[in-house]
Amino acid sequence: MSYTKKVASTYLSTSMIGQLKKIKNQYDIIHIHHPDPMACLALYLSGYKGKVICHWHSDIVRQKTILKFYKPLQTWMLKRASFIVGTSPIYLDYSPFLQPFKEKLRLVPIGIPPVDKITKEQTIQKIKSLAKGRKIVYSLGRLIYYKGYQYLIEAAQYLNEDICVIIGGKGPLKEEFEQSIAKFGLNDKVFLMGRIEDEDLSSYFSSCDLFCLPSTERSEAFGIVQVEAMAYAKPLVATKIEGSGVSWVNEENVSGLNVKIEDAKDLASKINEILECPELTDKFGQGALKRYEDNFTQEKMVKLILPLYEQALNNI
View 1 (cartoon, rainbow, N blue to C red):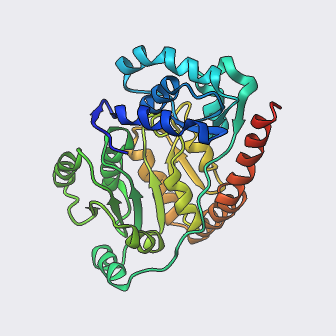
View 2 (cartoon, rainbow, N blue to C red; view 1 turned 90 degrees about the vertical axis):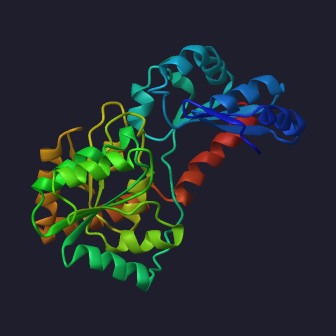
């Protein structure tokens, strides 16, 4: 399906509407993922009469102008849905858009399949050449406003000498972050790796000593990359974002520690606290792995979703 234009992080495609009209009668349930105004519009205009499950990943947080015009359609979708699936209890409780529909709300945490722990020797050697024997704090995500990488870079000034930071991902703030790294004199302590290919991800997760998610806004509603790190038994440091599920995924003192948003010194303090203590590093790493196995596997997610399909079809 071709998307013709992107406006304020939203893809627009008239072909989606026509395609859905063609295939709508082939399906008893449409499972729509939000936020996606184009998909919601296509559903509305298609004339589809079957059941709808709405998977609510996040509120529209920053795009206030789009929300102003989209809100009536969003409300229609929530009324139309048999169930509204949220990924964390915090988001289900906090989102103002969901409160009128409490009887429809269901919790289904995002689950991932078993991770491929096969590493590439060439990639491992590249990581080792950067680390130079130091412990590695790893983070992965787009270099955009709400990911909070400016605070992780700033925090690197306060990290112990035996710790370095590796950030994977590309995005529009790359140049700004490079300038910050240079300004703080961190060229040999913080490394921006750009896009990391899928086949190399396992090498980075396996090589790191701690995973950090320094996000700052509710646009980071869950932080699935934390779950990936958990599957590798890595301790976490994440942020306490009001109304977000990030700090629920990273359970305090179980899988790691959570810090105040936009606070580089607090971020550095918690990273140092964990990595200074091998027993704490191991405790949180094993706690992270168990939390993944107990809550965030693909198998568990499917077991929670399938009954909702059955209930929707049977009008339960």
